[in-house]
Image (cartoon, rainbow, N blue to C red; front, side, top):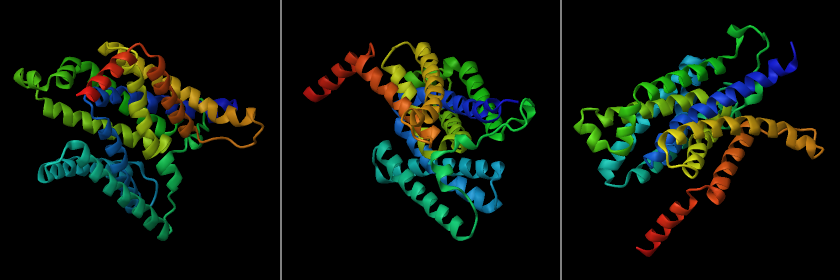
Length: 302
């Protein structure tokens, strides 16, 4: 079996699934103007991931996923408590909570190292796509665990978006009308937050708990600058996410070689860079850039 199928294909598959999944869910963060929520969840799950590892004493997927999900729920509750008790805007509450929880996660990483529990901090924070290998190719059941996890979450998220398309759309654009129709937008929003947490957790081994933020926000933001059609935006953002994944992975290996270097770049980092460049390109040449500029100008005049 060729080296591509054993080394590059599983990494590309994991990158594509992670980017497509995050782009799909990130649309609703962007449309609800809750992009910071994705940042908060990505940072807040770190102590849960490390806590699950410390309890299991190894890279046990079930323990780390359970810990991360618990941390996401705690963060969601803490944000609401801080917002109500402090009487501050949601963005400020999110910033306070995820900063504290991320600091706690970094501290726990140091404690794990002190106890000789070998967890790679760089892998947790920035991902390590290069370590996702399919040594038993072409046995499909031997695909890496990370690929199966991402595929499962992607399938569940896509099914939820398709089956609850009308309810989600109403909850995003007109929560009051959705409540009047009996759709319970609060419950829909909670389910969506849990899906974002699951996507962040499933993606962390591939792209890390930091760089996943770029995959959640950049493709939907770029798509938003290119269209004002709801369905087109969702499809376009997923396409941009997949394109960024493949282009970033290729860039990580090709760019240093073109410069005559013998080393390679972090693949997840290159994917994040390509995602950011997509937003920059859409901001400079996207058909909806003028409407955003006009809105900003009217705010300045006010």
